[in-house]
Image (cartoon, rainbow, N blue to C red):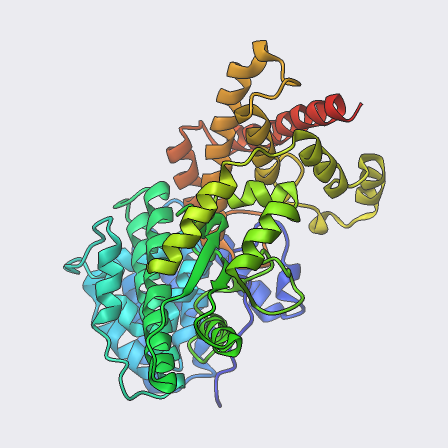
Length: 497
């Protein structure tokens, strides 16, 4: 019988088993895992053996039993052994049909202690590791290559791959495999306390930049050969986290494409479309990054790219104030003569004043009616409400901090100067808390989020933020959102009256 992989939630559910559906067998096993302290090492090994043996060959089961006997005692040396056992269950569930992976893993018993660190951290990192046995090299104690805090490390890694004479599908898969290997190395370095959250964020950004640079070289080479010309009058502008080198483990790329007038418009449009496809097309190896181009002048309508004049005219005469604020965190990520021209334009646009009144009006339009929102919240199922650790688009979250920074940095007349210094210190601290919280959340989940963060992730946060425990961290985040929302609310009221 072929083993049918189970659909297991990414992290161990701590409050409910609804996420497992009606699979009583799985629920019973997870219940046993949750009580792992009582059942002990030998019973846990037996539990895993019984879970898989009926659906796998005798040879495969022998390989797995060896792995259980080596790994489970190490997991039991840790406080949160139930979370480690659950991730081991997910890990085996993903790799048990891959004989090559099992053989490689079986011969790496000296790396099991490091593998346990991955299993104890999060399901997201465990899932990445299960995709490719080559990633096992990274957790070997003697793995020589370590991050050096320089983008050249990532560029050199891509340059070692020979993409010549390969079909597009093969190129896409090679790019995805290399990106995954490098991303996993960043994640493991963080888990292994070799780098901190801030450094990991920078490394994710370097990786994204090097990946885009590599793809640009491939597409430009193909385009130059097809049109028998070498052109340089195009530019890519990065916004958001990519623009500020603050990316998370699964950030998307907010990009705007600008082109000149040396070639036919179609050539540029096709060039940028091909770039987007290279980055975001899903293959058997997954995708590299989601690409968001909605910040271009035409938004979701019209061409995927714009001319220099279109971009300049739009931001000089038509763009919203929030777009002008977003532009301040944008950067040009290509390097040519035309890109320098666009970079100078960005500097000029960012030196223009932004109307406080217009910003206030736009924020008010973005906000929902508070009373109506409260009434609607009462009708919602609790699981649909924002989690305590969500900070990006919630009231009093990261977006509101960005607006507050605008008012404070512009020395707004509607701000109480007596409170200014104290408030700025508070907001700076909360910005750091939300930033690190967002980073960790993105190492624990992809899209759908459960109610709880894994214990190892919580410990990382507590240590980096110098908080006492999870309770004080939750209280800080909750009160911080309230303070930010109320402060911004007072500014909006003052300006709109």
